[in-house]
Amino acid sequence: MLKKSLDLGCGFNPNNIFNADEIYGVDIRDNLGNNILKADLAIEPIPFESEFFDFVTAFDFIEHIPRVAYTPHRRNCFVELMNEIYRVLKIGGSFLSLTPAYPHAEAFRDPTHVNIITEDTLPLYFGSKYRWGSIYGFNGEFEIESQEWRGPSLLTLMKKTL
Image (cartoon, rainbow, N blue to C red; front, top):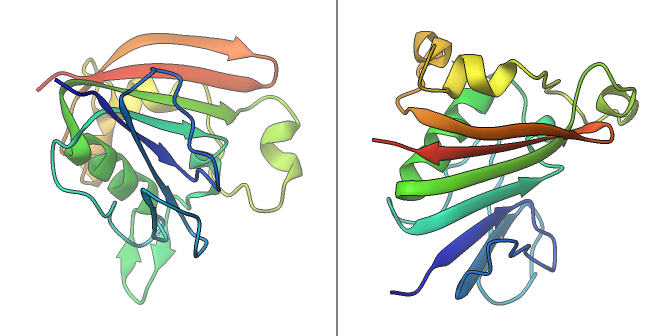
């Protein structure tokens, strides 16, 4: 069976670190090419059907998604994005995120970084052990496969378990 990967905020060249057979992307910009769809993932759903992907990646992306926005009503944008990632992944599928994280200056330097991530953010709020994100509407459950520092960035690999 063909493996499919989705890269969020991919620009012109979606990443394919899992060596998937089919590569897709989502970006906020227009006219980026084949298999790359336009969406503002801070306020719009991922424009693919449920359980479509074996892998979802986000390189230097989730720090750009606001935690809260009023459009005009209060939305938990980051939690909604995590729900969308969970929705489009197949059971057993993997989500890999690389993001500048606290306490490194790179997490704060860029004025478009509106979502500061720590070592605890993904495990506590979206991992299967604590699931604190359910308080804010997170419907899924990820198993934390690994988490490590790559310079000022945090690399987290999570698996959809249910």
